[in-house]
Length: 184
Image (cartoon, rainbow, N blue to C red):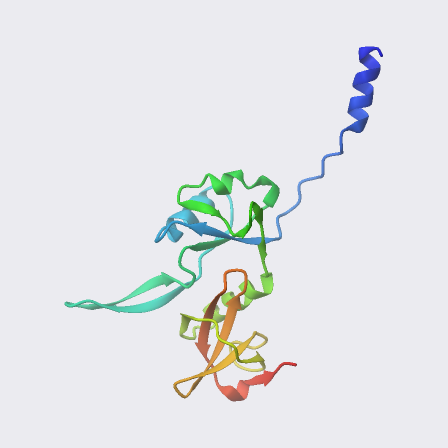
């Protein structure tokens, strides 16, 4: 077979390249301990839009008490990117990997991240908490309207717990129990 016909056969067998699309999936990036903010800065400098949810934590030392911003999910940074072009993410200083099964990254449910953002934007005191079984509810009024989560009773106060199921980590905020309606 002549070389020209072999080249024509090869060119026809190549798949068409997909046009680049805006990344819509969010992924949890595992970062080195206490390097979440530096990973966030590196990713932002590379043109990505990372998200590190922070809360105010009161720390007490022998000589003083201070309020510091601490990551709600220690060791993790959330970022939206095209999973097929993940090398720049993985080569970022402080990044250990992308959360997934084996080498296949798993995306985070965007509704869970939106609920975390809404809780942080509401101005309510937000804290990390352990995942516990409880009644699944939707908040119907107040600054957290529309957020779904689990309602728990902690020391006589109702707490709305929102979870990032991929990480098996949760965040809670105190809510008025009358604002919540049970989900089926």
